[in-house]
Length: 341
View (cartoon, rainbow, N blue to C red):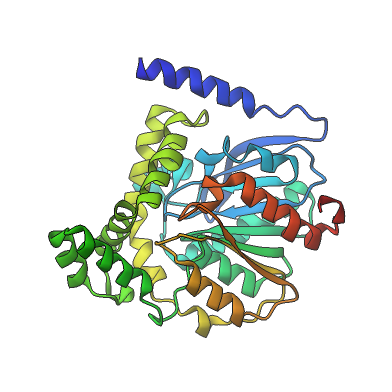
């Protein structure tokens, strides 16, 4: 019965994803990026719309599963979803042995190749850079370095790795564990300490899992948004689902690499419009460090907004609210489209 219901649900979602508009685009294929085949999906109802390139999180957690949840975005933007090396269908194609070098620098170079591929393929000068969670670490570097390629930066579930200036998320986790009387987990998290740059890949993953499972809103989002999207995705087979989860484990080594960055030292001057839209109740990447970083940023245009009733995965829990932010704050800047107001 469970598999039958899944099949029916997937068929319904597949119908929802059909694009029939005359100037629409619905393409997905492997593209040779950084010496390996990497999966890229391009979807939108009008090729004349601004193009968004997503830099997904995880690490190793492709955003492709959320395509049905963000279907409305495709009426106003062309959405490019790229499975990084070590993630999703890219991981499935080559397996662990076929991912090549798995470093932040390599992902950064891959992202530039993907950007230029999309600019050529869609015949656009610039694209909007939309980064979420782990992807924001790479996204900030891309936005700082290449305003000639990107019309705006939009960060959500925004990580601010600030040389351990802020340990509020870690301290809040310890407080939740103590209040809940979870002594074993409290001892474990206390033992690893607040210095994220000193964590092993296993400790980094264990911390993230503990944060997710100790906050009711985040845990509910994981079950009802992330797991449900994965299970019912019309773009993934059962084998794909198993591979999707294996990819996240494989990519854990990227977590500690990201924790060595100091975003303030890397720079707060951006030569493109800069936006941060953060879940107001995010316990994994709390809004206050993101707000403080945003306040320190200099940019031609900048804005910060909180997404109500959302923790981590804010854009996918509240996709309509997120679309409203894109339409009222971002699109008028990049497309001069005042009509969306």
